[in-house]
Length: 452
Ligand code: PLP
Image: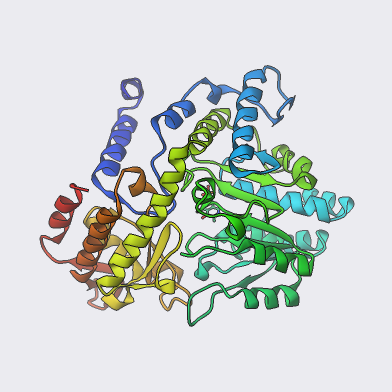
């Protein structure tokens, strides 16, 4: 850090401040974690300087022997850990991994001249007409994914995202009565829409998904089943999600991030069967530029860590902790979407506290509890203000918090939300953003959370 301070002290200060913040707050953001020192150190080294476009043994640059070693080891760990036929570890992020997967499925299933026309098309202006022509080139291919407000991700066909522009898109939601995924409704939607890609996976759905059933549905309509396991990859790696709930044996293609429950560096990865492997390996230059060899080195370290028996114990504790947190919130009168959780996250409906998600998020942050607001199904407050708070346990579990500790976290959350009232705008009108937390509560909660 002294080397950084010598060049740009403000960055050194920001790094120090981030460490202090992460140490002094309760990190409940479901997509965050604490990577190990070994993983962090594997990322900060001379591999950062190397260009290595291409793939293992087939590079567009000389001098890539050491990068080949790193990429091969990372891919080997990924294959072994997840029982996958093929692993591609270059994607820089989850979004990149999804783009590689989309183009790979398109390349496998759309005739080459149409694909080439689409890939050559300039969409620099990003007008709707440009995108419509691109979709036409591709033969108006379709994607069916979980809707954003049911917990899906914006790369699963959300209109403003490139996935919603490359594909004609429909989404499936959850049962209004239970909040649970309704497989019969997914089947019906798939039969009516006949997508090229059926996507399963989520960012804010607090339950397991039955991937065997999703594959059955995909097969019935001739779709490729793609699973985005970005959120729950750590639970798959740790063998908490097995059998019908493990996506790898069921999906033709699986994407993930490496930095959430998997506890690695920021990045993405694609796992697939043999028929898609060659195409996936063309991720660079199809979608990606030069890989990040230093991040691939860190992925290899984190994947090796995830193959240790202790990671299974960690994954089980993540789920046990989420359940303890959910039960603790319910016992104190909180409302949860689907009434609980069986993965690493829970979605609190904060409307019972008379708050929007945005007010709840801000009040919790005042008290050192870091969460994110999140739409709940059919959210009356929309995606910006929301009525929900998403909480997840991967990070606190890494810090060693146990189920008793999670009950205390539930108590702290309930204390803050109960002591918060909505604020008003400058003109004295009710605000969906402003909040007031009763005096002294933030300090009291921070003090209590320091013992966790
Ligand atoms: N897929 C899912 C399900 C996610 O939740 C996320 C991130 O929130 C992503 C993809 C995108 O990951 P990244 O932020 O690394 O691009």
